[in-house]
Length: 197
Ligand SMILES: [Fe+2]
Ligand SMILES: [Fe+2]
Image (tube, rainbow, N blue to C red; front, side):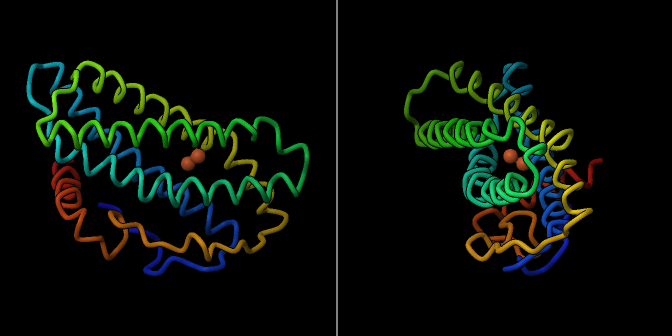
């Protein structure tokens, strides 16, 4: 399992460092989406998915990806807007993407929690939503990697300014060096998946 670049999340950080951490988040999130996809394949083959694993992954998406990663990006994109108007094309769509990904993620986490407690929910709908979620989030990250982050790289090349992250100075509870005990099962799963590669 990858660990984060630093042991402590910074309060103030330069653009280059923020970009490195955002890219690392993307690699971590991609690993989790692969795990989700494995579970979807299990469903396709008629097997019961690991609901606890899916729940933990969606919980992480809510408490870290939606609550820390995306808001950090929003700060970064705000800097871009103020820096050069040639770099702002399409940025309005990012917020909508972040919002719809967060809404779908929350629905999925709640549906999975309900299934775990025995509530009857149409499995096909949850599976459909999950396929949709993986596709949406991958597409969003690809856009950022291909287009938005390089714009921020070019800004950082000229002006590697510091950004105040004090409201978002939170350690990653799964991939951070000190993981949160709530995610112990997910961390063990990732370690096993890493060892099997
Ligand atoms: Fe994003
Ligand atoms: Fe992102």
